[in-house]
Image 1 (cartoon, rainbow, N blue to C red):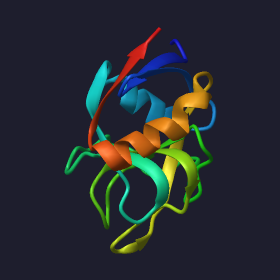
Image 2 (image 1 turned 45 degrees about the vertical axis):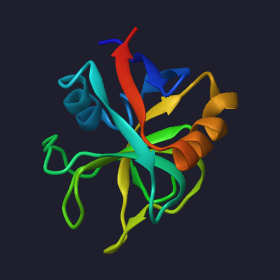
Image 3 (image 1 turned 90 degrees about the vertical axis):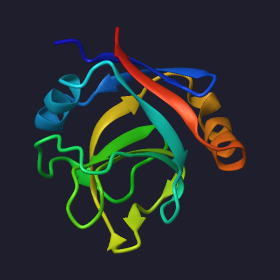
Image 4 (image 1 turned 60 degrees about the vertical axis):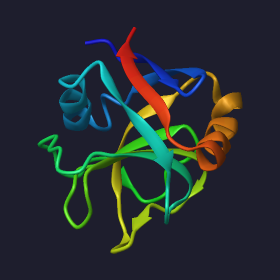
Length: 138
């Protein structure tokens, strides 16, 4: 199974790797949805991040390698529960939360190139609105 991805978000392209050792169940569940396309919008409560609200989509995973503080370039999956299912990409300081309070998501993807465009992507999403995002295997 390949662990390399291309993530296209807005006008930017990032190389990324799946965190297969740290989050094997989350990676396997996400791979079943590949290629994965959605929209990113700016977070409301979490700080400097963009997210894909996924409603009731059930990836069939629980918590593994979960964090409330993803670093810039880390992508987490919140599998649902007290808030809707979502995927979040940190571009700066993030304290992952919802209107219900602090959440934790599974860190399952890390961007490995293009990081110089990450902050610009976040600010573009904040000021210009939703951006297309697509995840593909290399």
